[in-house]
Image (cartoon, rainbow, N blue to C red):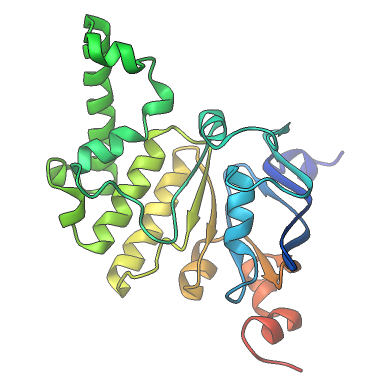
Length: 262
């Protein structure tokens, strides 16, 4: 083994020939790729290429028909969604999914549920340790709101926030679960140019905290700027993988995704 191989980070996520069909629609067809620890990895492709389907397979919303999903070397294919969150996989959604009638702080505290011991009866009894745990959870949630720049909005109702801020609340909630892998489904959708630039800065800051990122994103400027590697899907198949520079020059990508070439 040479020095270059020794420095290569270990994969956090590995997909091995993962397939999924819905009736006669083959949404994912033997897709294989890995995401290295500490990287920002992107999935791109035209609408209907299978990007969100792969997210749902990784996070356990759908079971794969064939193939395997490994997280830190462990096959998580049989784990429920909440078990994958507890293992260290978190996500955001293409359409913001917040509890709009709850406060911003309460929404972020929801992300801590898998890291707390208090159950239904503990919440009813309000034992001293339960109250301490709740205060610790509030403090942690406030820390994450400060990280995304929304600590002053902690007591505001989540549904009253501008759309861009709601996306930040969702990211803070995902981070509160202490993931080692964070999946972001079109995080820049609906954001203006300034918000998109700020998002790119935030995603890099998240990486510095030891979180590996996998994102689906249609904003190619953002994707090419922040990604270490990119996987391109078309009609459920992987058609290319490489660095942003390699992807920009790939003829299959130009034809299938950008509408160029033969």
